[in-house]
Length: 263
Ligand code: PGA
Image (tube, rainbow, N blue to C red):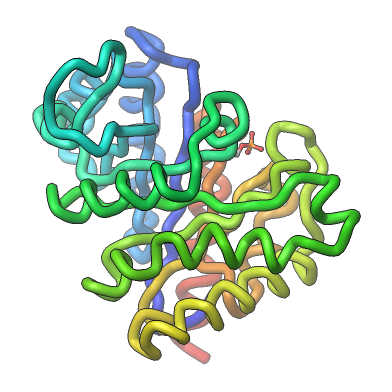
């Protein structure tokens, strides 16, 4: 964490809490997250619950922002099952997760498709959280930095147009949902590499872009990760489905943000 960047903690609910349970979770978070004013908080419910969750947060006068988990680059048309940036906006979303590894791996989303989505999100004024990360095989073959570089370079042109608007999330695939977390040092190494790639576009892009860590972030390992110089927050999956766990992570970020300010 660095004092010049506001930490961001995002909860990726994935294919969970898509109905009344999502509203209950949002209401609980609206209450428990009143004291984390130095941290940006974003939650990404499934599309079925986006509008209801946004309403619930508004009703509770919460500053928590809402994100889509995906969007199509086109604004309308014959794309069965897809959701567009304008639809996300209608539902109250101001952010969108793009290129999550589950979509890259299971649905074959390419770097090019991810780039088109990032471009469309920026055009529509929805802030993208772009996910990048290597598989276990790639890590073991020593290809981590190269794989991540290709994924990041695919989107830096668009992120560079408005430095700080978009966010990058480094999520090593082998750490997602597995309970195997990257060590703070290993994560920091990749984060610093990503910042270097952003710096190739402009120093402003490098210093203003928040780079989140994702992959089994929990209350018991968040502090080590968030203390790293180039880790500006977290993209939290499993632990974001319990108000208590997600709140704890946000409180850890809040504590570190306050420390960073005073030092
Ligand atoms: P996890 O998921 O925290 O359950 O590992 C993170 C993510 O996929 O965004």
